[in-house]
Length: 252
Image (cartoon, rainbow, N blue to C red):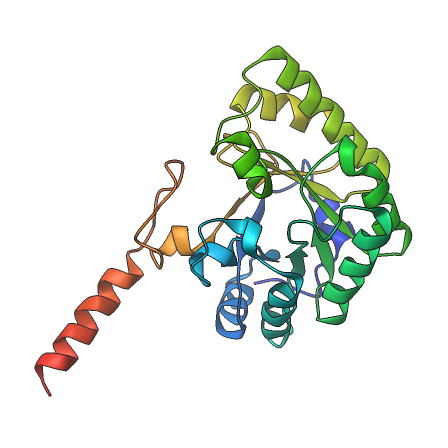
């Protein structure tokens, strides 16, 4: 269990000292549960588009929806750092990025995350310059899944490796406190982790990152209709619920 409030600076200082566990939450009870367990970083992820709202991907998620779920999670008043995703096309310019970030902070977020590296450096600088902690996200970018034709491991080609390293360094220079590496080739993820002074938080990117993040639904089996290949569910919660509901119905 965490002692005291977790800040972005505290998470940054964990690099090289202890692994960072991060999970997603989209409502009050799950945020409260994760916080009671001691998860130091909780993300109100735009993955809620798929595992909560039934969208085919994250590109449909709106800022209003992110605000709604951020408010719900924030009501748990977690000791964990509560971060929230900026949804697609809410940070196309620095001005828009800052306005969107401020809306999520007003809803209760203590940090924001957006996808991209060097291409969004001005947006990151605007957010950080306003005093809002920023969590980076490079590698596979779910908000660009349509342009990229699906989910693919990044970094296998030399050009991708160089671009990922440049993106990571751009985020460091812009002031990010940590960066998520999604579906990055494990050797490249290890190289990035060694090359930058802020923590890397992997998802499907191998064990060498400074921490790991998962969609909680994937970890505990509350979205059984699809599980990413890199996830090993630790519980099949919906299967247990199905049994309980079926038994209750039989007893009516």
